[in-house]
Every structure is written in structure tokens, then in C-alpha cells.
Image (cartoon, rainbow, N blue to C red; front, side, top):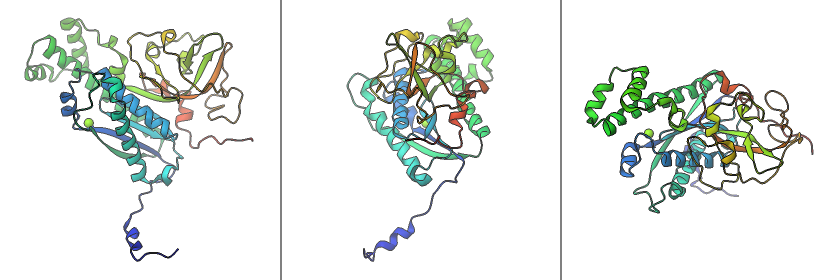
Amino acid sequence: MAKSKYEYVKEFETDDKLLRNVFILVRVDGKGFHKFSAAHQFNKPNDVRALNLMNHAARSVMHELDDIVLAFGESDEYSFLFRRSTDLYQRRESKIVSTVVSLFTSAYVYYWNDYFTDSRRPLYPPVFDGRAVLYPSEVEVKDYFAWRQADTHINNLFNTSFWALVEKGGMTPKAAEVKLSGTDSKDKNEMLFTEFNTNYSKLPAIFRKGSVLLREHILKSLDKDHIIPTLPETLPGSTSADASVAESTMDTEEDTATPSISETPSIDNKRPLESDGATDEGDPTSEGAGESSGEFQAPPGFKRMKKGVVIDHIDIIGPKFWSGRGAYILAPEKRKKTGP
Ligand SMILES: [Mg+2]
């Protein structure tokens, strides 16, 4: 086909392909969210509706982009880690970042009324910016997520203390700030406990630890409608149940409903998951089969269902999080499908 005489303008486009064989991390961050949260009367220090809406938007991104293997969210930001070998948009930075930010933002608005149920629209369009950062090894990837969760902890402890002083203690914001300046986390914990009868460590984990989105296999009980993710701590018969696991919120690829946050739900009272019912048990072609520490077999009485996006509020600082699931998250290659 003949080229038009205008086509030369295409030559002005620059090549922005990201380096191969390194981890791509995309962070989305709310712009002007102090103002946005005030305008929409978000609860202080945390608004669980707003956090769940962020989680839903992030889940939408993970459902659309298979190469995202891990996401972490707190406050008005979300971080998405791409599989090291991803070839999404031939690794063009502008395409990757703009797609993540656009999808996240549109989902945030699209699902707004699922969480802010007064059926009013947002007063004005929220804005998120985005950036891509490259990390050469798993050391930096692990430290990146540790950094964001440490940030969650520091900010939340400060905000919880600050708003206790203002709302329950009757202090002015200025006086509360002065009182907190120079205090360490031990001082703040102590103050919350003695002055406000608040045990910080008992506050919902979503506030203290942020939200982690993972792709996990889901187990379904064969004798009742009972589905749990295969987080190592939640396997049937596990004796080391971690308290944070009880706060898991799960969802599968079929994105149907409002994720709930409750302080102390048990596994049994969770909403049964909608799923396509497919199992990949014994299917060597399925993604993730045999990952990490050998072939994963569903325990007796359960069948393993395909991977779904699971939301949890667990520690991602330290080796416990990465043991087992690290092999999948940090794998250099996507597992090749074999066989017919
Ligand atoms: Mg922000």
C-alpha cells in the first residue's frame, strides 16, 4: 500500500521499550487525594469503603492483565508486579503504564456505588498517575514490597494516633501534631492503649498491613460449598493458622460481588465463591501445576480449582511470605503449557 506523504510523522515516536529480563513494577497513585477524600467525607483515619474500592479496582487490573503476579495496595496507591518475562505490548513503557492507570481509574469510578451506596456519583473525577520502575533482581522486589508495607505501618500508626487525639481527645490538629512529634512507635502504641483503650495490634489488618493480591489455587470441599485459597497457612489440617488469614477476602476470575471486610470472619462464613467450576487437578497443562515446592495435590476431601485472585492482609516483610509462593511470583519464565 502506498504511503501517504504524511506518514513520516510516525518517525517522531520514540522507542520506550523497557529492558528485558528485569522485573517491571507499576505504581498507581492518587493525585490530590487529601482533597478528594475530604470532599467525599472519607472516614478517618481509614475508610474501609474506599480501601475496598481500591482493592476492587486493582482486582480488575489483575483480571485483565495475566502477567501481573502480585499487587499491594495501601491508602491511595497500588503497586503491580509483572512477571519478569512479560512481553505485554512488547514491554513498551507508555502502553503498559497507561493501560494499568486507565483500567484502574475507570474501575474505581465504575464500581464507586458498590461501596459508596448513597447512589451519588463522585463529585468530580478522581485522578491517578502511574510510573514504571525496573528492578534487576528478587532482592529489590522483596525490599520494594517490604518498603511499601513498612510505609503502611508507619502512616497508619501515626494517623490512628493523630485522629484519636483529635476526635476522641478533643485536641486541635496542631496540638496533636506537636504531641506526636518525636514519638516512636512504642510511644504511640502505649498512648493509644492507655489514653484511648485501643490495642493497635487488634485493629483490622487491612488498615495495619494493607492489601495483598495474589493468584492462588482455590480449594473446594467435595461435600459442602466451602472454598478456601491454598495459602500455605490455610491448608486443611494446618496447625499454624495465622490470624491474618481469617481476614482473607477471596474472589475468583469471575468478578461478581463486593469484597467484604470484616474483622473476624471465619473461613466458613465467607461468601461462597463464584467459579467456573473448572479444576486443574491432575492436569499437567495447567498454569502453575507443580510450581514451587513440587506438585501441589489437593488434600483428601477437597478438589483444587484454577487460580483466582485472592485478597489478603498479611505480612509481606520477611521470608515467610515468599516461601512457597515466591517461586511463582519470581519465576523467570511463565510456565510453558505442554501437551495437546
Ligand atoms: Mg497520593
